[in-house]
Length: 107
Image (cartoon, rainbow, N blue to C red; front, side, top):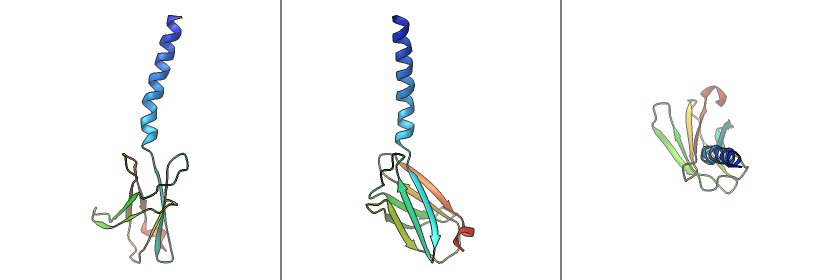
């Protein structure tokens, strides 16, 4: 009986340790089409990131622009310069991710 409690306790510890890592994950995808960059942000369970802050940087880490995701987790902006862009999402409470959109993908 005691050994069963120990095993249950160990399993519980492992589950609790794994949960925070998954809780802070957010997905971010971006693509370029017809002079615009489109982004999509959502959590692993499919819930869209609403009012998440999207920051766009160049490769020298200079912030180029900031925006907010809409109720569908989408954000887009016009962009004509062909250069690598680092796009970051901050969905609050530590939910962050980044996506690098390569200039080769802007043709």
